Image (cartoon, rainbow, N blue to C red; front, side, top):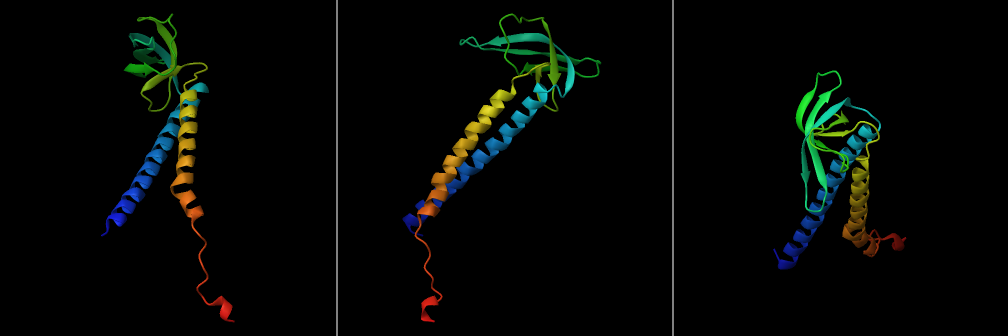
Length: 157
């Protein structure tokens, strides 16, 4: 095997690997978007979140973690992360109306969740990267190839 063949094989492998990672990212982001849209439309188990922790970074961004209890009391899950933005007025010990969607590991705002925006932005970004990637590797390369010649002897007749 020549070094050119090895380099070409590695290039093809890297193109396929990046394409596969982008597709996996798109599928995963679509699930995040679906869950966020379900929450925005109020589809899920309604209840309240008792805020147990407020984890803040130096940038000022805070994440709320709490225990979710459904309105009918049948579902009680601890250590649920609040998926929507939390304003500064929310403190440890507060009770917030929340919503759990499917098997998600977080709680969404019970009315008007905007968590879907992150999924929509991520999906648009990954889809744009995938389209650019497909254009340059390998679609553009295929389009740049010269057309195949007719080798059937069509001119002999």
